[in-house]
Length: 142
Image (cartoon, rainbow, N blue to C red; front, side, top):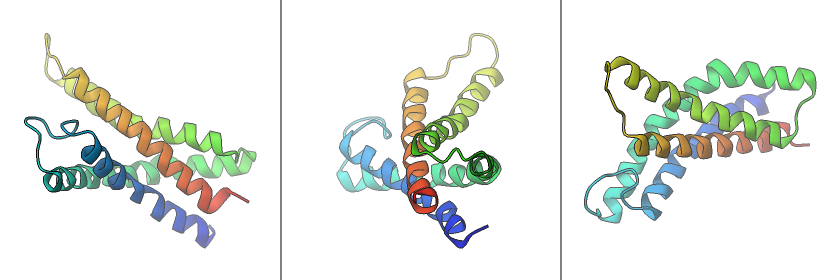
């Protein structure tokens, strides 16, 4: 594996906390419920949640993205849009599993806040697409 590829796998998920912080700063109340909070608190809350999501991003990268990337290279599917679509898919997968696990594990009549899950899925898609774009720009772009 090339050094550039290893570096790209290490750097790409670092965009995830940045997206969470920006989202919490520019859309108050989206990640932190309740009354509008000061910007410093929203930034720290976004960073805290973003670091958790980044950890999930590294796990998804190691388990799924690495083998799929090598499969893409072998088949010469190295266009940017394939990586963005893959990033969106891999970005929403953990949140869908999380939401479905909560729904399934709570018994009949259970409800999970659909708005909360939809926000996490949207953020997962955004983070996945952004991380995939950064990865593609570092290692694949000629």
